[in-house]
Image 1 (cartoon, rainbow, N blue to C red):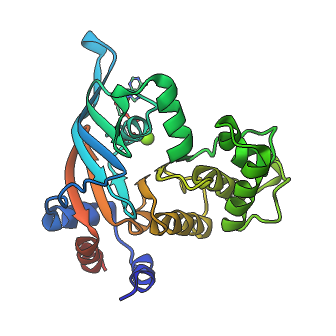
Image 2: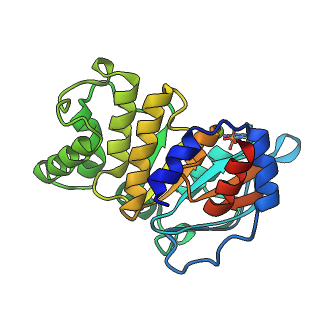
Length: 273
Ligand SMILES: Nc1ncnc2c1ncn2[C@@H]1O[C@H](COP(=O)(O)OP(=O)(O)O)[C@@H](O)[C@H]1O
Ligand SMILES: [Mg+2]
């Protein structure tokens, strides 16, 4: 069955987080062996915020590999460590212990400027609240990371134009965020996250503020970047969005408690209908 075919069925299947959780527990199996070419690799990542009595341990020994062409959904209750995991994967935060390897580079061994460069070149972030700069046009928002990275305006604009076309905003290059709908703003954010062929897409509830039709369109765009060879992590509360992933990782209290792969996700979705 084609991916699209199976997805269409999935989309119509109502299922609860509890059903997913229970079925995933049953269907869970060890993660596939670590690919040497993983775009992202987390090894024994632990994160503690603060010190002493007020310390909070947000992640406890998380191992995770994400291969090219693979989208991993991360699910879990509020406070389970999902956003912390994304920040660490993206080099926005440094773990207390453990290793973060992006495209073969150990982030801990890189100078801060080198981490920043890797982030601009290889990583695309999509957050729930878009984070567009209101005084810049759609095009300028998209090309900013490239220009910061020293690309000429001409080259940046060509890449920006391709990215905006790809998200269906070919005719809104000059629009400011305020002139765009929520869904359009989120599509600009996605264009910004993928411009220049970024290899790792990190999305934190990117559909949270959108209606279901727009959320679906956003998921389709993320998926198409993954199918083109990027790796991705998608934090989501919504099972119907997690169903676009190749693998679902469940976090509880900073630990990976379950993992289910695409075929077992099919099983659990069938079981929930
Ligand atoms: N900057 C921070 N300082 C202190 N504690 C934090 C910080 N960020 C997150 N936490 C705590 O770490 C835990 C995990 O948070 P988070 O990664 O945001 O989880 P999630 O995204 O799953 O809701 C929570 O207990 C949260 O309160
Ligand atoms: Mg969060």
